Image (cartoon, one colour):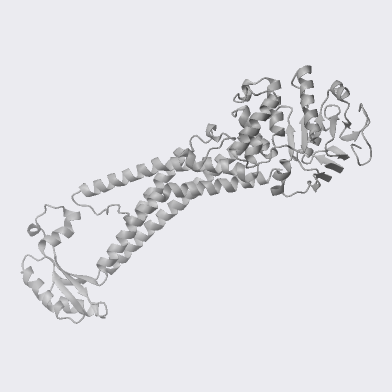
Length: 295
Length: 232
């Protein structure tokens, strides 16, 4: 790895005490950045799934009433809906499906027959149709007492807004991490420049160009950042696995697992390289600017 | 080769430490620079070594006006100048070989050429058996010879030495001066700053005498040529 980044042969930056803890700080930053990326991509997928599932999808809810035959009510509602122009599908959810939907709230082992659970009918509206949902709801309530149309839209809008807000927050955290990393690197480089000012002066006087000196700094700091990023990334991946394991082991959970997808995984694996590049560019700018003020 | 015209120099906003310095050094000449402590010798050497810029006047090195030279153009000029510092300024973590090789490495020479030249030069200065030694393990005289080897490895056109014999005994000092003479014979222009009047008298080269930041011929053992030939 040292060969990959080159050595700072003349400046011996490797022996600087001031940069000894830089990899630890970078590691912590990468840990947070990786978790932010994880939540960013997971939410993106979740929002996409919600939208796909609920677009053109409505639900009819028939309130629980122990005094009436709910199956008959469901059959009446399905018949009415199936005859409505624009409705592609009207399907009563079977008890196991309803149970599956309620799992996050009541657990896997609940007996649906003993609970006052409403009956549900899933409706799919054709893409090019313009169904008057208010009129349909009115007609449905009149024909089947206790039936109501749920169009999901307000819930979905709120969930998408919440998801986007969390995504923005994660992006802001990423930006903050980048800014803090750059500031930390700037301070470390400036300290290095002061500590090695005599050697730098000698190098200048024997004909070294600023770029020659800057390369030693940028190679060393990029190496520190890259090597510091690896444990942070590994720790973040372990935390994600633990989180997903815990979510999966819960019998019922509203929390979605962290699913990165290919793009998210690539972004995660690129993190050490990106932080090394960011460090390299920052160090180069700082060193060249500082040296430019010398003779 | 080297021409100073009405040069003045100050550090920051302080008073001028050099005033109205004018002289011309011909290629292949050998000059001593002397004067009392605080006269401005080190400041004059800093101007010659391009480590500082003059606050006024013109400094011409190798037919190039360098006082206003762009920063990117300085390294090429500096590579034509060899500097031997009083305090050596070697890199302690590098071997004698690597210290001497540094100017060639910086200039981008190939490794094979670098180490062949450096080994020959270290042999020439009498350190053939100390190539792997690091400066902290060398004596003052040995360090000085490593510093000289580093200064001349690039075959500079101008060699500047600041009190080169200050940290060694008389015999070693003489040997060092003979080394400078040999370099001078192969065409290198040499400027040696020293307090040692005996040394100046023994070698009899032209002397630039600095006092209160100004050049005068007072104190020289051999009158320097006037006008624009040598030190005025």
